[in-house]
Image (tube, rainbow, N blue to C red; front, side):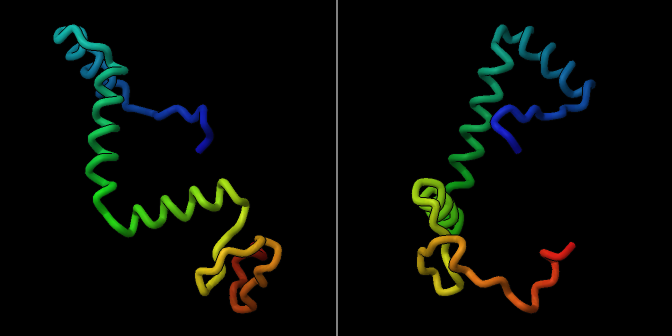
Length: 89
């Protein structure tokens, strides 16, 4: 995904959503933001996800990656796994 990724919503669902929001006199954008906030609030109760997000943020800020021991290192110092042939595809 990119920062400008658009979500594809089935047209009948989007039409119903638009009609409901118009009837309730609320912005479609407001409702989507509220739903996303609730989803994030619920999902971030998972400690494994919190650790993953923290590691991802550290990687983004520093440019470092974790090796198989969990030590932060420069990405070019990590040796490819000889048994991992998928990178050749």
